[in-house]
Amino acid sequence: MKRLITLLFATLVASFAMSGLSLAAEPQAGRDFTPINPPLPSTKGKIEVIEFFSYGCPHCSDFHPIVSPWAAKLPKDVSFRRVPVSFNRPEWARLARIYYALEATGDLAKLDAAVFIAIHEQRVMFRTDEAAVSWAVSKGADGKKFGDALASFSMQSKVQRGDQEATAARIQGVPALVVDGKYLVNNEAASNFQELLKLTDAVIAKARQEHK
Image (cartoon, rainbow, N blue to C red; front, side, top):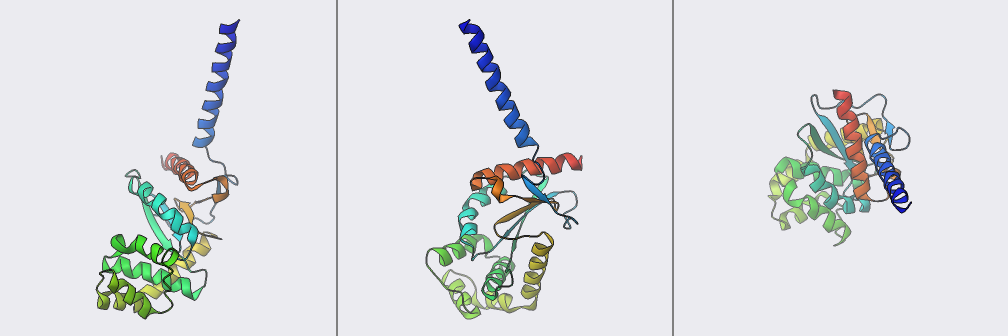
């Protein structure tokens, strides 16, 4: 009898485990993601993951050291892109231009995390472009190159395009992850950032099956 009970218990445990795996592998619309219709333009031949964020967002600051190593280990058929958003807030628009300027001057890898730290830990206020340039110079960036990039019309255009893309994806808050231009991952479906990335992996797997 004891052996029979043990066997039945083991069978139930295995059944629940398989059920959990099945749920993880089959994310559901409305629960795990929101469909984006019409879909955003996406990189051909790749499953693109977009992170919408802002340097001014404290949650994005907490998410950054978690999402960065995850993004670095994505499979070859997946690309990762970050889009800073402003939500029509001038101070966040400047922060978005800082991101694009760092990207344009080749300083992003070195100073990306430093911007989050400056804002959320050191309470640096980027209230003017001059303040942003001064900070960048203090971190070793070329002041003229960075200043020219920050003030350029192309940076303004990129911020506008990023905001338009966020609007098209119906982004209400950040950080927000969009997979394959079609699926906005529901942050509420995860209790922490690690679970959010596991859910994103499952949505990526769904997109991969559709590509096949």
